[in-house]
Amino acid sequence: MPKDWGVRRIDHDLPYGPHIRQKLDIYAPRNGGRTALPVIVFFYGGAWSDGNRKHYAFAAHALAALGYVVVVPDYRLVPQVEYPEFLRDCALAVHWTSRNIASYGGDWTRLVLAGHSAGAYNAAALALDGRWLADSELHKTVVGVIGLSGPYDFYPFDGPISQRVFGRAEDGKATQPINHVDASAPPMLLISGGRDELVLPRNSENLGASLERAGNGAVVRIFPRLAHVETLLALSLPLRWIAPVLDECRRFLAEVTVADGAIRRRASSDAGQR
Image 1 (cartoon, rainbow, N blue to C red):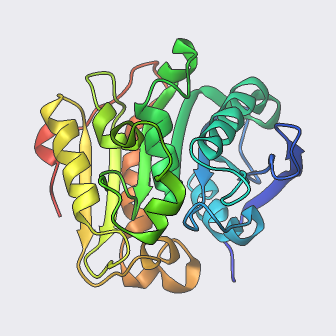
Image 2 (cartoon, helix red, strand yellow):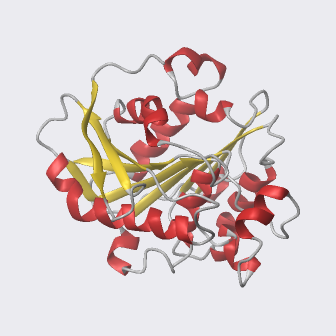
C-alpha cells in the first residue's frame, strides 16, 4: 500500500518484553527538527486473536506525517492468552515507550493512545482503567485517546468474539472501558462508521456521552457511509477520499498535544457531534 513521504521507520523489532510477540516498531518524520515530538502509541485490531504490526505501517506513516513519533507494538493474542493478558502487554509497551522514546526524538510527557477496533478498546482501557497504567505520573502523560470503530460498552457478552475473549473474566462489567470513566479521563476522539455491523456505533456514542457527563472532553464522529474497517483504511493514501478521518485526527492531536504542560480538553458541547 502506498505510504506518506517524509516518514521513515527509525527502528524495528525492539523488544519491550521477553515474549516473541512483545516487540514494537517506531516511525517518525524524516525532518523532525530538534524539538521532541509528541508520541502516539497505536494498537491494531483483529478481535484480539489476529494481527501483525507490519501490516499497519500505512497507519503509522499517516500519523507520523502529521508531526508525531509513532510506536506500533505487537501483543499476545487469544487463544494463547486470555483477558487481561493482552492489556498487560499493551501497558508494558506504553511503559517501555515512556522510558525509551526520548532516544528517538519523542516527548514522553505527551502520549496519545490510539487504535482501531480491538486496538481502540486496548487504548481506551489503558487510559480509563487505573489497573493498567498504575504509575500515576505515567497516567498523567496520556493527553488523549483516538478510537476508531472501538468496542467500549458491550456487556453482557452475547457474541462469539466477546464470549471467547472475555467470558472467563471474574467481573465482566469491569472489562468495559465505559465503566471506568471519571473526572480524570483524558480527552477522546471516537470515530465510528454508520454501516459498522461488527462494532455498533453506539459504543462511541455511549462512551462519548459518559465522558461528557463526567466533565471530560469528547469528540464523537459517526461517518454514515463507512463500515468497520473503513475508519482505519481512510487513513491510507488511496482511500482518504472516503471520509476525513485523518483530518479529524490532525485537529484533535494538535489540540491535546500543545507543548505547554496543560492537558487540553474539548468543550463538552462537542460530545456527540457528527
